[in-house]
Image (cartoon, rainbow, N blue to C red):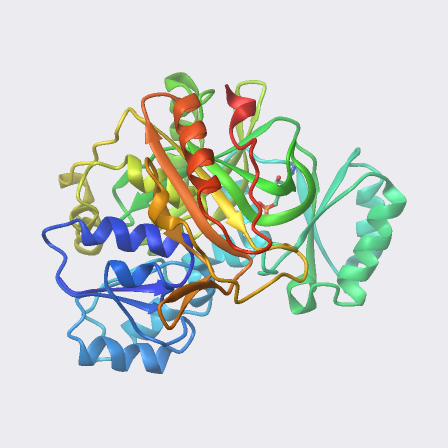
Length: 424
Ligand code: AMP
């Protein structure tokens, strides 16, 4: 089977690494990919939103399956684009159609979906420029802190946590009337703050059957001790130690099954991954958000724990017989440390030569923001590498991943040395 992966981050590197291990994987293309993905397949310099270019690529390389890494092409309708074109409609796309992708593309849609299917979530209401006054009244009733969410995709920046009603009012004005997050904040979800510990659970579904993939916890802040600015993700751990069998059963019964059944009953086709972001509030799971794809860097911790053939599982998604496929998950613990560029998540250094990767001993290095410059691998993105170690216990996994990250060097290199230590 010839497979095309769309994307260029650590998540796509992990997918390429895993798919390339399958005896069923023929030609593997990654568009656009990075310096690391070319170890497992062939990079093609076509962007993830260039649907016409992707069509040509798929046809000229006899591609049999397309795996979409990031959310943007899904929310823009790449799956629908394939289905609407006689030349490529037979080629399965792993990732939902536009309607299902609204679970991530519109916070308002996803909150309404949760409400319709009695999925436990924070209390919320949605406001527009026209209902700003009602919004102000609601802010005064909801308790502090107050969570404001831009409805649309805002590159991970559209969520604000406000410590006072005044601050929330000001932000609401800026979001709704001054387009603080562009068109994404023309609607704003005002939400109650959930107190608890966050975790993520991933589901693979063919729209009818599903498999629950390993849980993971990610670390979003740039600084040690969870301080400083938010980032795309500085590390992850899988599984999450406090997500025991009883808690996972609650998640399955209260969230996963109602989600799959809800999609089915509303006739929303969905073939792909569902990222379920949760808060553990005193032993009960509450939804924070859906994403319509795998997380990054959670994928780099989750995939190394999947022992089964991923091509086989994705074929089950495509063919609608996921229930006949086997999912075997390793008991080992995975820890991922993300190495970033100096200055990230602000203005960051670029084009720095990376050395020392050959000294890594007990980890898998997944490339994220890297490119080739002659024979050198150079940094081109904010998140540069994801270093994952799989070990018998969490302490060893964390120590190995951290030690291996220290063996790699580039000017301005930074990574957190405390990933996962809160879980020990
Ligand atoms: P989201 O884009 O919805 O995942 O929100 C980004 C982050 O904001 C989440 O990962 C949480 O850390 C935080 N967050 C979002 N909604 C809430 C909430 N209702 N209560 C507490 N924290 C939240």
